[in-house]
Length: 234
Image 1 (cartoon, rainbow, N blue to C red):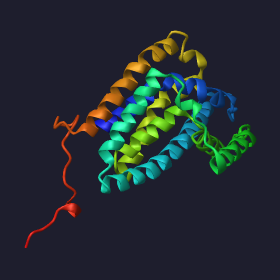
Image 2 (image 1 turned 30 degrees about the vertical axis):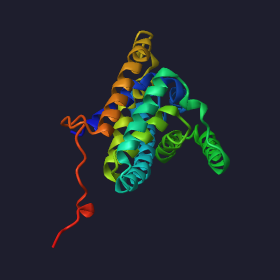
Image 3 (image 1 turned 180 degrees about the vertical axis):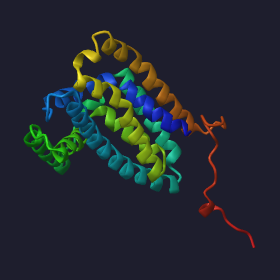
């Protein structure tokens, strides 16, 4: 398995404590269609599937951008920058959240928030999926970091896989908190917050090593020449 894809899942798990604080209130605010646990589970899976769908679209967009950078010979630099951004997020917690989109993008996000608020009490399957999808579009430092990571993959398909695995890494905590807040007990959240910086730092170091091309198999392989860029001598 591509180490970057494994790192994407680790990044999602590492950010679970952050996700509980950011997305947990939205997950808890959405009513269940029925008090039965099976209905609550289905609604929970729909919510998280909507969020995963949004992450996949982000992975497609940022992966395409990364592919263009790879063709321009800039992918390795992007990988180093992505790792550096993650390290900064560990050293200065919350720094990524301070960046807020401006201009038209800010207006668009405001509309997403309004649509999310209007949709929050609906329990139809399509409404639950839409709520999750809109949740995935809200500003989040952890998602910013993951998007940069998907750019570093330099591939559309791998960019999508990176964001999907990142999203799946957040599922255990968010599914557990909606199914019953007690599942994510008082002892679990401090533990997640304690180990999160180490896991995120490990992912950051891996990205930097990938960019440095040190010739270490799987971890920091040397760049391979793109066949389209190889000249043929006749």
